[in-house]
Image 1 (cartoon, rainbow, N blue to C red):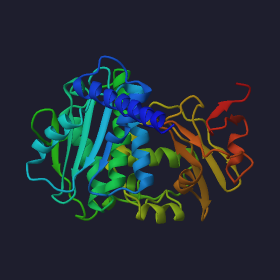
Image 2: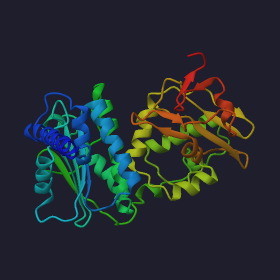
Image 3: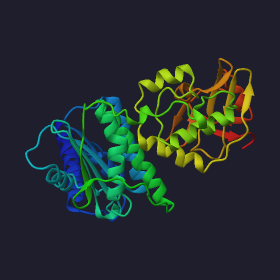
Length: 364
């Protein structure tokens, strides 16, 4: 019996060695990785040598990696360095080659996000197959306008996750032919962009200094209907007005926003998403209102409003409590939510929710 157990172990080790050898010999994959190959290399997609992520954050990052590979054939890796002697550019090239970034992709689509917390630098290395999508302008934009604002307040892991979400969104847009337009300056050498990470440099409050009274003439939110409050909020996002004390915010929203990292990229994304959606007339019941969008327009989540001191105010805290977003940036209720729960459920009685919380028209 011992002989057979030993022989089975030898066969298992030989099989695993063969899989690894086959993967490491090819620089660009010609076919999708098998289930066994994906299992073997899953540990290579994320290497937190600097130990900056919790297990939960690491798992969330890994889920995005799998979603990018499954949905858009992008082999995306994240490496945090504990130490290095060479330049960040050289380290990125070395890690890119060592980890065979792009090897899990049928078309050699590879991305490597390299962070060195000790030397306060970050770089996104891009394979040739993705240079037309992840241009230097886009890479510099997400680093400066999405990742680094989180890094500045010491939330490195959250910055990685937020950036990964934007990469997924970029691939989704590219798949339907949408180009990237907002230009950003960056230091670029070849297929990749490097920037100072600015870890712990302190929050960038430039977006928080805008006028909280967002109506023309310096008025607050007096007399606005729920629909007008939402329209005013979208104008504020267009103007990159990240003031946490906007007059259209509820008191609880103001408290939340004061401790929230709001980036330029987030505000840009809000404007871009809602510009393409069609709002329905506000649904009102007592001191509560909801502005929702066509049920098929899943990128535009509903807005919740509450009446405070006789005026309608935006309640963003409710979005945090009962809404979630998928990898495709499609909103849904938290699983298990029912319309009869809470004060805003009245606005969704004509929708049915599936087991994952996604809304559908009744009867479909």
